[in-house]
Length: 240
Image (cartoon, rainbow, N blue to C red; front, side, top):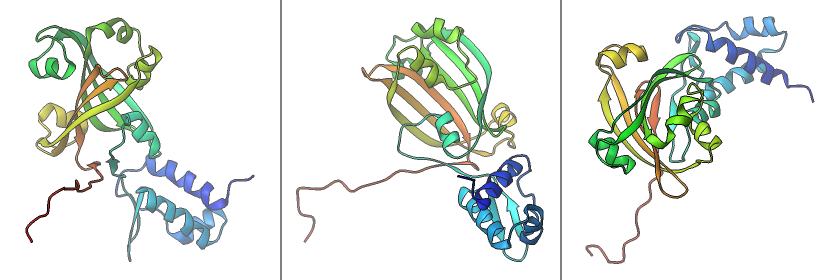
């Protein structure tokens, strides 16, 4: 079946928005209708889809402007790569460092290894549509040294682990507010002291063994953390 016109226009404009700075104004509905040789109603459908995606924002009386969608990290276990692809963004990474080192105390505790034992450390800058989103410092047990040395670490680390039969099935997450210090801010394209989300994830395999500790700083202007909360039933009656 042929792609509906409004879907084709949505896809075309989505690609264009990726290459435009945030705040750029899109052509008017009338101009877009002329360009794509469709009705303004069809253009409006396409723009509605981009608004839903968080790609554009309508400002009454001024027009439609490009914006960068906020990524919501939900309660499910997903990787950075899966998060980005699930939102129509192109994930990529730049490897900054890969080395073995003595495990700091907090890393040793989280990975369940002896203090100061050797672990693998990798640092990566993570991108969405070529825009820096996250600076990640990961630590893994030394048993993964050979695997990491021959792997493409600018892709998905969880896929690298899965290729060796190590499937991540659970994680423990800690989230706190932070500020982007000078080096972090420079890499993330933020002013020094800008707010950031600091997230520490400890990932486990099906046997409950820790396989990775990821200490990441995310851009607070692009990320939010969402959770579903339920009140725990109580067996006693409260004040009556």
